[in-house]
Image (cartoon, rainbow, N blue to C red; front, top):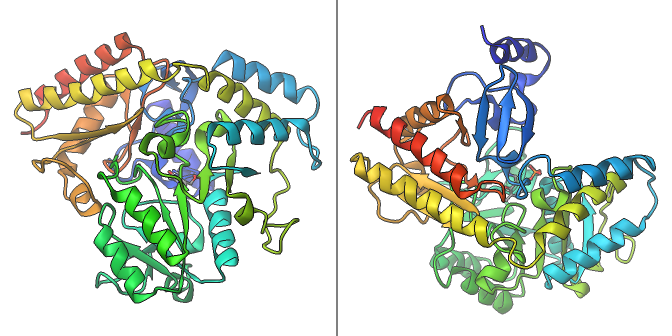
Amino acid sequence: MSKSETLFARAQQTIPGGVNSPVRAFKAVGGTPRFIQKADGPYMWDVDGKRYIDYIQSWGPMVLGHNNAEVREAVISAAENGLSYGAPTEAEIIMAELVSETVPSMEMVRMVNSGTEATMSAIRLARGYTNRNKILKFEGCYHGHADSLLVKAGSGALTLGVPSSPGVPEDFAQHTLTVEFNNLASVQAAFDQYPEDIACIIVEPVAGNMNCIPPVPGFLEGLRSICDKYKSVLIFDEVMTGFRVAKGGAQAHYQVTPDLTCLGKVIGGGMPVGAFGGKRDIITHIAPTGPIYQAGTLSGNPVAMAAGLAALSQITAEGFYDSIFENTKILAEGIRDLAHSHGIPMTINYAGSMFGFFFTDVEKVTNYQQAINCNTKQFNQFYHGMLEQGVYLAPASFEAGFVSKQHTKDIVDATLQAVNTVFASIEK
Ligand code: PMP
């Protein structure tokens, strides 16, 4: 028995499913999750001493690669002054200034402790600000696990939402409308039906929770004009895309300005951090300047701020993203070309340093239905083959992959060699 197997069996005695976040349990692909000992640069090592090239990167945060020396030192140095005060610090101001400078639509910023908190708070703010109850989201987009957001589409295109998890009251879910990603007509239809009831549209500007699906040209622009027309708040959930798809996030890349933005992952340099912010006249409606309540004992934590600032100061340097974007392109196109040379139908998507590959003969995947119709059997075989070869991909075909600054051309070449070996062995 491997050490991971032993630990997984033990973990299941006291931790539900043996994990503290479900996707880590390898349920979609089967097998035993690897318990991790340490990580450095592009690599992670499991407790059995096996090394992996890691394309999960802690699900996005580690854009600098693992164990970045400056981030590590900033954390150690901040910890020497105490771990938490529950009182304001200068680091929080520097963080807000830096975020605001890098993502100019975020005129004011409130720090929180996770992506879920950021989206949950932004939605409360949008509802309180507009005095409307309904929200509109997209099928296949994930925004954390708050009640209003664990909702899927009803059976007809425009039925009210239904809970996607037990424990979410139907009374909540009915305020969430779910329509098709990349389909403006479905958004317009929702606003035709509820012209004065929709507080906000929340969207992942590049969807990263149904594999990787970028917006089709005009989609984000269309959301902007619909929100303007109906006085609804446009929220970009950039928890995944922020500081990843471009320095200024997807809004800089696609040149569409939301009213509110949610951040997480990269902004904390690996520590538990999230943020939301946006237009001054909207965000000042939260406490203590306004009546909409939002708070957090550990929000703006000094150690987390130190990690985030040390990460952002490197990421915001001129030209930081050039090599990452180039290597992402080489990787994604390389996987597709190898698949085709082995007679395996495949299409790919990538945006900045996010990528996805789909085992399908559909030419371009642009929505959830296409994503879920891909060949999961082939994906699972590929997944385990790659793990065996020492490449750690997301253990489900509905997740984006991430490339860091430490995934150099050599690392990408080594990955493609492994891909070639695995494609030779999987069922066609
Ligand atoms: N929004 C998006 C787009 C995400 O990808 C995630 C997490 N994967 C969240 C929100 C929730 O973030 P967290 O897991 O930090 O609560």
